[in-house]
Length: 606
Image (cartoon, rainbow, N blue to C red; front, side):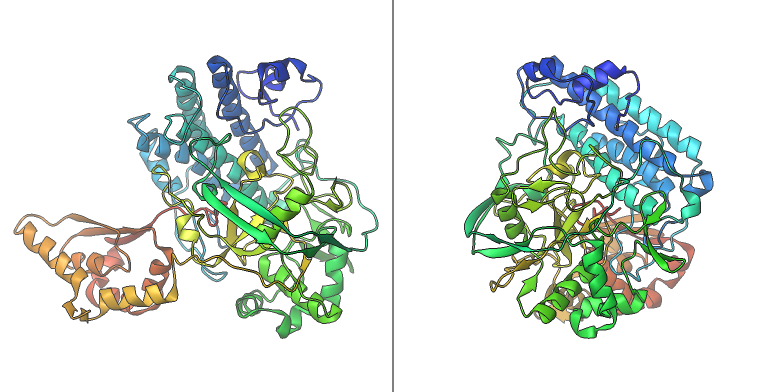
């Protein structure tokens, strides 16, 4: 695919799409082979060349993202939700621009907003906590043209910063250029997540596009086989002081593990291989499913993968903008629950200990396949980075060592809930990128898909999703007697939720009278006879102080990063407390709750 950034000719785009590992690599690059630009190195010898590289990276990323929305058939497609768990697509067109504005303001690089009304609408997305957690919020959405004008203004502002800001190499975590790269990589995350929403949209709302064509190859699916992997050690993580590429907070720190020998499937599980599970009544055999998976299946009434379409007595596959005859040799695309149930079925029918790989085992596969980063000046060694197709392709197309598709084609589910490395730290400009996902409910996906670009393609990338979530994601399986070792991640535990609930809504805690209520009473008393118009409760947790303040103030906002606490407020005594003490303000909209944007998993599910 070729994406021409505004203000650049094709020759310029091809030159800078190499990513400039060195000035010599630019000179040696074959100008007839344009590539979608790779994530820049943070160092270099030529400041002017690095500035222009980042400038082109910014424009080509925005051009590609805006071109993706050309697959929508009409303006009505922007306002109809593809799925009930998400905003309509008009939100995502504006959200990535607002992200730039918000981070640049936090960094002090700009002091004014472009459009406060739009930035209020586009700031916070939806992180569904369950498959039945429907978003019923109503918005006065702007027109498509208004959002396009807003994006153009943001583009001009950021372009001016890139052209004029002093640049010192290497770019570091603390550099004023970090939020520029953060905004670009965030847009590339949404390039993928928005493509999934378009794929889930009703077919009448989408249309084929010459730059977003699926693979047209298909053949007989291979019989999968197990390849032995020798024991070895993996080392993961990176340092803020010597990283070569931009990274998200969860990539920093250190982790190592000794991996016992295991066997892994040579290919990703194909549609054909998964069909055996479907035809064996796998979706209706309760013993194959974990408790959470059974609840998801009961609610959705799923009988087959979500992208499979039964039509005229045959199976078709929904790709991004069309339905095609089922390519049985392509990887199946499912959520974690379906992948796990398949492995359990496979274990029963073969008598072998079959399961999904852990994150550490995936890194062992990466190492034994002798893989390396996507090259700056050549096609990727897998269906990755939009180098080949706007869809998956046969599982036999990209050999990597003795395996196929260790990276690329589709993301691969792992057994590992995301967790922090030793030395983990949040970035002050995005302190809730990952921490809300440390709840043992977001599993890591590895390897990238056909549309994974930029940071997503790096070996160090760590993205996680809720287990019921759909992405361009499939799986491979391993056979091993070694149990999956799951790292501790206790950001949101049931025990902690219970303690917070008792602390906030009990009469006493550790023989201390209710502390959140006492704090609110002090604040109300301190106001005296002055008008009590607005109050802000930062770190409101399960909200007792917020609700007490609402008894006196006209408008109270409680903010907390802890998503599970908001869910507990809805389903426990907190909600009843609101009904008793703040009903008037709740009915009139004076009492509001605010939760921060969560990427859902490292992969920005907003």
